[in-house]
Length: 591
Ligand code: ASP
Image 1 (cartoon, rainbow, N blue to C red):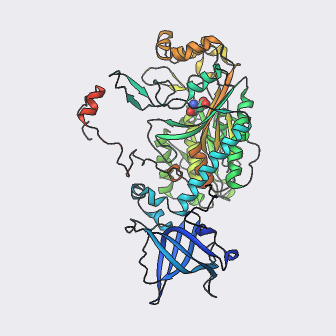
Image 2 (image 1 turned 45 degrees about the horizontal axis):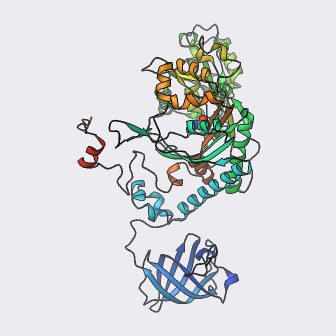
Image 3 (image 1 turned 30 degrees about the vertical axis):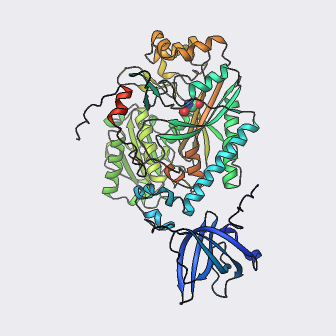
């Protein structure tokens, strides 16, 4: 027997879909009792809920149904009496009368109300009873938005000729940068698998294998501290293509993202713009710029080129942001404590200090620092920043990267709208540096993305002499200040891969030992290739208007990495450990 999308052997209609066109019809609905109200001795109103919504049923008061009982109700649809129509409910014009009620399952009272009031319940409790939390409209909507995104992404990739290939979950440790989850081997005690940080190496090998266009909605696992936009395990649309340049990859991924956005919001976003990493840093201070608002960083180093003010003359870079009084009217009235808090925040991010200036009438600068600047410097500063009375100017003088970092963060703190507000602003950030910073343990550069990114052809000659200045053919996709994902054109020549590994402090012998399985195949004819991966949890969260990806994941871990429902992670018994050849150290002393 085939069943329709909604009907089953047990029901004829979904609760939320009953309307005036069903009047006089006999219907059967199934669901959970959302609410029961007595109506005199004889009658009770029951709001019955399924994922589609709620319908009011008028039942015999003697029937014992309570909150969250699972029931089947058969009755006749009729208009609600005058004056009792509920405009807030899709089914608010009708009710089901003459009801025959069958209790399919009784239920204990739920630990929290199964409606919007649960938003205020402690998240641990929501997660402990996630199966009840998910009954709520918000979670139902979010999980269905998620399914829409996955389905739209799949269709978009398949329409572009991508082939879905699954890659293994038990893999060796790979040098992609994140801390890995390890899985002990029973057959080879003392040896470990890693859970994949991403299918990176496998998708590249699929290119060597001639698959040409691969995609997968892949589960990735990283043992990193959790945040609002990060879980240990998360989903990515992972893709790789052969015989391509950057624009081919960006085009294919843009198509998938736009299809997902259109499926959820009903309208296709405009062409995604591009900005270089260097421009993003100079203008917005961060490599994931939220371009929905202005307050861009203003370059001031040359304004203070000849200054006698030590804090400025000794700095590599001076930049400022103008918190304009017209948009942020209270900025000029910030009191001491607010300004001190901004300064503390700047120091926390790594600045030596923060210079603030309030712009008064006649463009006079009110600031503890103003007296150290010459008239000409003050005038040049006001001109460079386009300052107006009522503005608050914030300046940082430090290394270039600290200046960017601090002002980029303060700009977000002060001006960033909630994630779901304002237009959706997608941007490709291109030309990331090949290396970022120096690894404290090895003293060697660290990869900007991962070690498989192709160095920019214009910069390759400086790979050994000035590695930190080399750009990569690497790019990120950013939406409203959230990094959705990254990708690159890959190295496909073993010798170039070795040159990059050497810069990272991985010798040829080390590379052969650890990644021989990856380097070896490249000798057998690797095509030029590139790819990308974006986090579908993050995309769904933004499209669903949620600030936290936990709200769009059915069974997430808490911020501290545990699962209040199953209590994972849990200790295991000695027998299981013995089998794996593992003996535990005493737990570290609590500090
Ligand atoms: N594997 C990378 C990541 O997960 C994405 C890519 O370079 O394709 O971030």
